[in-house]
Image (cartoon, rainbow, N blue to C red; front, side, top):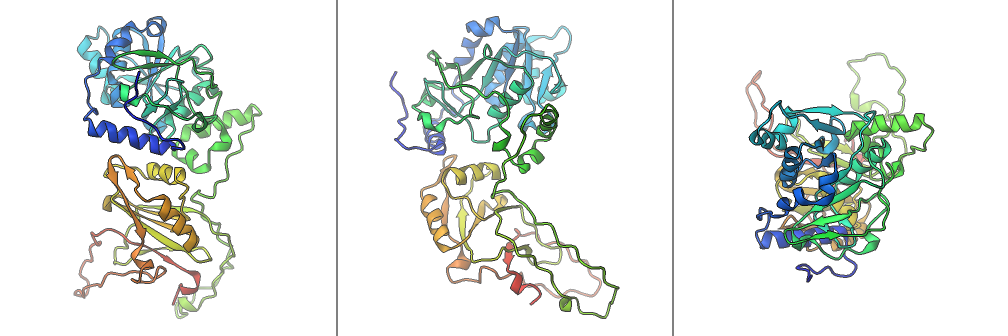
Length: 426
């Protein structure tokens, strides 16, 4: 079958995602009639399964409904794995089809479910996942956040899936494209069947599915975001498995403060005259999200690592884009910054690099960047092009007020400034 979207040689995962999203947007296919769902009840592997796991996204709502009407056990992962691994949907007694349709919605999943923990003895027969793009060889590309891969790996760790578990994805025909084999890594989930409005494709994929969590690919930040990973890691560590995490230069790590000797209070002493203890440290990549102004005005200051830096402005960020999605784009374009200042509400971000040449390379990599159909604008930040100094704190002029009058917080967007150690206290 001729493909609607041609993938260029050397394309990255993000390039493929963008091509598929652009095509779906241009052809107005986001809400296309889905005869694909009518294929599910007649799908042989679906008929023989007893326990079905379906991801919680809206496009798979009909798949959840068919699972419930077939009186099968339906497991739905908790959104973004924030509060656990699975919810088992428990419809009310003598539920009608209308009741089951409600249970299939995101709200129904919250109201008609019980949590399933890591120690539950459950065997999943069929896994239904969404995809942005998929190849007839079974290689799959998701939205870039890795939740489907992680959910499967966690199920493998708890013994809920094995080699007999079938993985299915449901997509539009245009989403079936050629995906280079080299883009599929050891943690990536592949699929056994592709269901489209016109056909069912058995992939015969030989690439092994994840056998468990690969801890060396996760960092401490990910464990903070997904608490159930901490519990799983503790269980595997107790079992004697290697659970060493990745030490990433992109982690948001704050260096521990040096112990300071206790000093007797001296209100007359000028705070600026106190000696400063500034431990030498290597620059660490940091992600600064949603900076906030002080109630009295001015900018929030963040400690600046030693060494020169150069900052890029990234504008036109589409509404609803998560900072994690932007991080994925930056990684895939080899443009990971030293620091990322996220101002999503203002549809922009600032990317700080170690030096001018590093910023130049990133600027080249980010040209013609498009996300969700929106073209982003990457350029040198104004402070790098003749405006205020990059390490200068910007402060909004304050109006004088009557003594004792309330001073409400400034309602404008925050500016995150970077101050070098040598300028502090000046």
